[in-house]
Image (cartoon, rainbow, N blue to C red; front, side, top):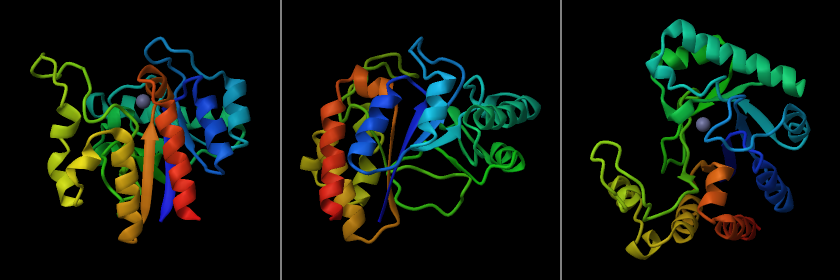
Length: 233
Ligand SMILES: [Zn+2]
């Protein structure tokens, strides 16, 4: 089983992720966007160029819009210009794209293909394989689980068990025992072992370094990478 990781937005803290990956002999794809997100510190162009010598750099649009909610003309511009920007910054070909907010549809996927990319990633999770290179899902996001104190976008109330509720059915279809659903780390370890045991294609970990920092998950990330390395030996 292939172990893949990708990291979105191009935060300065991505350098800490890159160091961790290097330590464990793993690779990452960093989907960078020139627009700063959440007023966070972002990678400079020089840092992106240096990072491209260690890991893959992918495009993630110019201004981080939902590509499904703007005109096809504007979406194509976002997609094409971001590829050009990454190539100018790194001096290397940029072949992979990531949809901001995971928002995509057939028309947007067509535009990404037209712009010359060979594949694109979504945020659809709990998957271990993909048939469409322009709609590549992930397996697990590093984010608080099973409880996350944030407002449900529609209900406007705190929805602490939202991350678990929305995935419960899929997790059960993967035979996930309840004890594995009690923390992010136990879930990550269970799903990785599940993929290995069933000889599945990949385990794709994705995240935002800003969230790893915000939710204090560096220790869990490091422990999981160590687990993957040990399990693979
Ligand atoms: Zn993003």
